[in-house]
Image (spheres, rainbow, N blue to C red):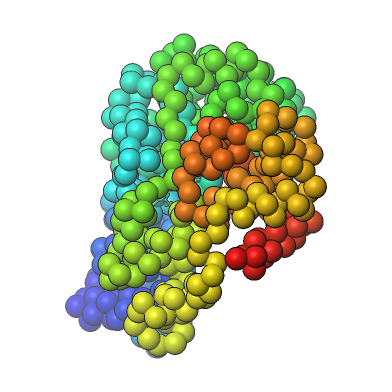
Length: 436
Ligand code: ADP
Ligand code: MG
């Protein structure tokens, strides 16, 4: 039995977690309740399954500690969905490589001009899978919300129609499972599994690049599902035709339905996103601070979120309220002189460094010795200036914005995987900043 005393203690436990573990606090913490407290086990009731998973993954330790501190007993904590789970047909989750994240819903997605089409098409797919846009192909640079939208589709089904068999996985996972199936001689089981789903969602299909065997298998899976009116949703960091060495027949199939591009968000959308993310954490931040953060982080929303987390952690550590001063401190004040870097400053330093001419960068020459410095210019221009993708492309030989976006994600990946390049690009960044 859950007595009033237990309920009171529980609200103290939640308060304690909020102060101990601020990064993981969510506005839905108020919807948690005690289902049972018996034999040293505190069972906490959660509104849905993804919330159970979120808490298990992120908050088990803090709830356990808080429960022990408040009750004075050695308590074990369990999270459980309020209502019993609906019966599932088959085992739809076994093909899903993600735990659904309750942060990544449509409700928490801010819609703006840059992502309106992608958002609307994902909502349409959730309302009538297989009917409207099939396949739906989302693309855009890193951190612009592709994975978020895919989670939101799954989340929608989990809530409204849990019997739909969804398979949601990264392309890398698809490829790995395929390879394993070949090695273990279980290819027909593999095929059966994928061809029996109602909705197939694959994230980051650019991973198919250069993997002929997997492309072939993917092609057959695609056809089998498509022919049966099953919904297919795909995402990539570039348009279908820009995925390198992707077979033409796959490129053309990816374009059969709707191809929706996501662009970097405008300043206004970025402000709304900062506010949304703050709200999600149960935080109130002033417009002034949201505007400041939005003006600092432009290209990648993941960085926006990281900035907010840093700020929050700093405020906790210093025992201060979140203020504009603290926000400025969190970002490290950039000297005034860095503010007005131009694309010409960037091309000047990069061409000197790589010993190439500006005319080469602007030419159609695609040899690596020219293409790399050109892409680095695009990357740095995106990072260090306020120019739009179109303007940057215009400066570098009239290239369109998708080329700039592609260059940006390519260099960003290079930085993640190649220490030497990373150092080189950092050095160039410093030279450009100091040059002003
Ligand atoms: P991608 O898959 O395109 O690289 P993600 O979907 O992982 O990007 O998004 C990165 C982060 O940015 C996530 O935390 C996501 O919630 C957030 N995000 C991106 N776009 C939006 C948006 N329009 N509204 C709210 N959050 C967003
Ligand atoms: Mg992603």
